[in-house]
Length: 75
Image (tube, rainbow, N blue to C red; front, side, top):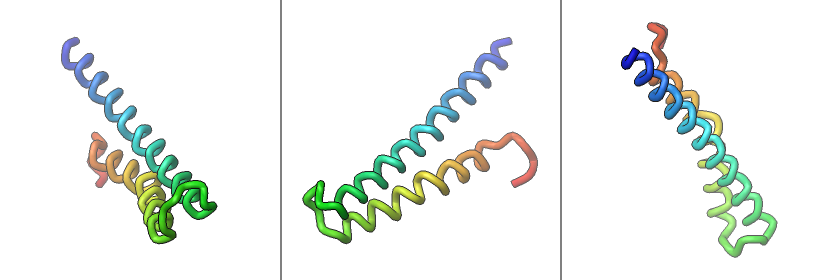
């Protein structure tokens, strides 16, 4: 039973980390939009950088982590 509880705790922490990555990516995208709308006083290149990194963190990173942590034999 101890192994099952440990595996469940590991899966729960991985799930939380993947969702935290998605939320952080969305925050970066919103910050980039705020810069483009002159709400935040940063240069335009910073806005585009935030947008690109936010998109990567929202869509690509969770998929890569899920694939890395998958227990299936398919990779």
